[in-house]
View 1 (tube, rainbow, N blue to C red):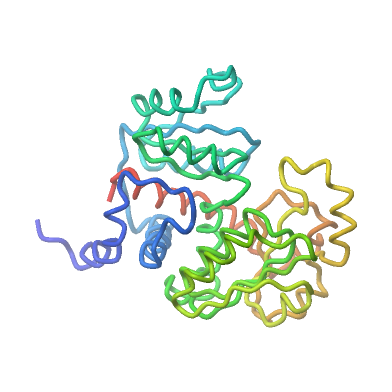
View 2 (tube, helix red, strand yellow):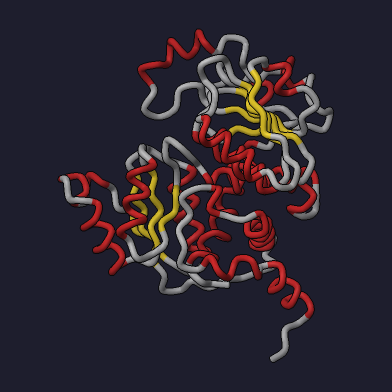
Length: 327
């Protein structure tokens, strides 16, 4: 049966995604600009129920070495909505927790599951799974990157400022806080989409220089990727203000030291007033009100934090549908 015009348009828009079936997503930089745009468009279609994709019979394995609320639940619900299933492979209840080599675990799980989403500390551990697995491996967070979060973030920016991902080009997102894994993926994904990304952080808390260099190399659409050490300079005129906790998982012992270092860096009403009057506020959660963000800002009219959290579900549905060959 010939495709209807709407189906034909959807097929054309998602053509860049077809070649990703069976691939890994270890970094935001694993995607091209066209693929990133197409993933966001597919996510928007799935959210609006303009597309239905059936992954019936497919199984996603979750290997999470770090605590999780949004990532764990959003991946589980995403697979359920696509007709698939999820199995939680907690290290404490699998042989991973007793020292089984990654090479053995990855090869065995490749016989049982259709994809793995891994949330761990070292990027090298994720890459080891990807090396040995014969199924797609997805970065569900490492200390280096959080690419699924970035997809949800830019989907939220698109909803606020345009009707399609192409409308994002030229906007400015200001991230205020630690130059961590979230900042890294924002820079890389922003570069692919033509979004200017300013990282504002105290001296000594800048992003990884190699990631910064990579993001600038990817900025083919004219995006400016910059690092500044003054919060007012970071946020001035920006269309989106973003922050994250000052001490990420595994850095809890540095909390007091980091609170001193980040004094004056709270995303509060004063900083928000320096941004574009239309600016939205983002936070990947969990949030510490009164530390990296004020209660008034996270609960205020500019906040899109809970839309952003919801969009993890839709962005990951699009990603799973793509990597598992559902298009």
